[in-house]
Image (cartoon, rainbow, N blue to C red; front, top):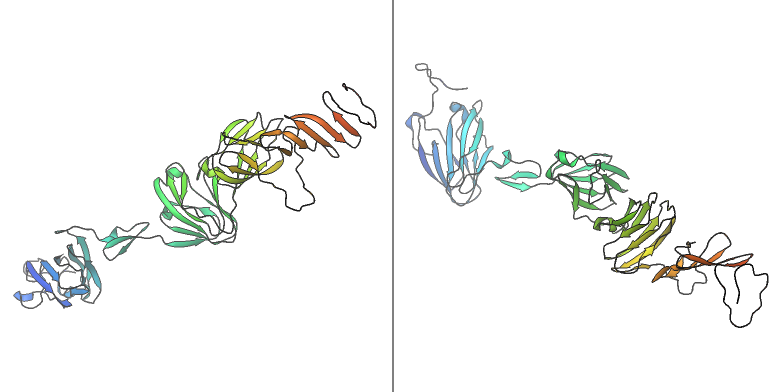
Length: 416
């Protein structure tokens, strides 16, 4: 509401005092300069205020004594901030050193009134922080500060644009949380993710998009990371590996040719290869020191799966079998060793091409189990000897020196 002159119809303003300098040494309450009164602590249209110390306040006069639109431009010329309050004691604005703020009355229905504020820089210009705070920011006094508020989720869902700079805390069991198409979020969206639940949570991408080079990323309990969108895919920063759940796995489909693994792929201890082979497959690993448990679950169709760094010894994993391998940065070596004092050693069946007991420098030479009740010797991938309950079969010529006794017949081939 406004006070209007019955003679002119114009809005009545208090007697206008254009300027006043105030040395603010204590909390001060202002009055309107009514009827030309310019003595005491009156309010002016422009006020230069110099606080002597921090924590002081300047209180505006009663809002219900003037018309809406009454205004003041207040500049802080001191080294400390001070607070401008309404006549009921509420904070209108805190003005930092060097700042200027323009106040105007929009509602005069009470002594407090409603005051609006516009940053009106003189020495320095700055907007009101609370009007600028968005996702990831919070206004503290007149400054914008980082903010990553946490919220708990316990069932599957999809990250959204509103999750920018937020902290998502998983509190459920095993589950899946989805990432939307990267183009919908753009190249700067990020969120913080922490698994505080009781099972692994899979963060899965949309379509052919990837996170750290894979279609999904598994967070074991206690693991966390920043998840960042670059507009086309996702990556993590600060991914924390759980000290309790130290193993991770990935599955890769292969068919033929050479596959160069990424650093993200080889970070998984347990690796499984699937697919129907149409040719020999070579998996090329970065030359780093690591331990791998490799499972070949391909349909081999007579083709092989070879692991190598391209620098030293390679390893061939037969189809349907697993191997624990150590890479020393150059060579792939069998990690299985015989326990001291053990009375027996159990081997995988192996194959003619890859004997289960072979040589690091020649993995196609050694012994294997061709079938139930049989023992085979392979040289360079060729079966030379097969021993069973009915006797031995030798492929190729047999050359013997010295004397011996043979029980049973000798069929085929030559003997000298």
